[in-house]
Image (cartoon, rainbow, N blue to C red; front, side, top):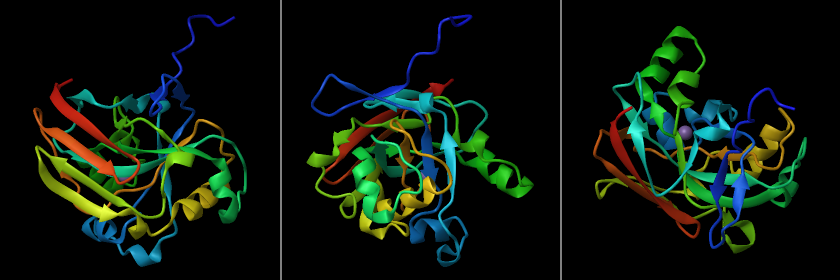
Amino acid sequence: MFVFDAPKQASLAVQGSDDRFPIRRIFCVGRNYEAHAREMGKDPTREAPFFFTKPADAAIDTPCAIAYPKLTNDLHHEIELVIAIGKGGSEIAEADVMQHVWGAAVGLDMTRRDLQSEAKQLGRPWDWGKAFDDSAPIGPIKRIAEVPSVERGRIWLAVNGELRQDADISDLIWSVREHISTLSHAMTLEAGDLVMTGTPAGVGSVVAGDVITGGVEGIGDLEVKIGPRA
Ligand code: MN
């Protein structure tokens, strides 16, 4: 018996169904597109893939409205392909990764860039920049059998109708097979884990009242309105 009611299971909508995808953890890949690594002041050719995390309940269904988060004056959008793991595993070979994938979606790795930059400068963890309430708006998950490709397809984001991010997931430095295999060599993946695969160039600020739209070709679209400060 729990000493109080257990927290509600975090979950996301599934395309074309009333079923929900239960979330265990959210892993995020850092700097996985060359042009974005360069805009963040890094040389993308020198780094192995690295990861950070968000809490499962940072995920929120879209379309949605989220509050402008606490502590920041520089909230950034990052549009990303999201991979949903349906079968756990450890030390998964690249050739076997897709057997563990349940589906795919489009999501936003919302970032308090000022807090992340300060953490980098001070050699502190990124959590306060990345892992906050409603920091992962994600569209309905599409079953992998219905997904044409997780290796190519346009990925884009607009703010108030103005295109800001426009790339192709074939530009990923570390492909889905590569980075999920790498991740599974660091810890055991479980059903319900999500992997946000990194953002292309063009990240930037949003303010209260902005409307973000975005998508990944063949996988889905999202719409998120930024509300007043929490
Ligand atoms: Mn990101």
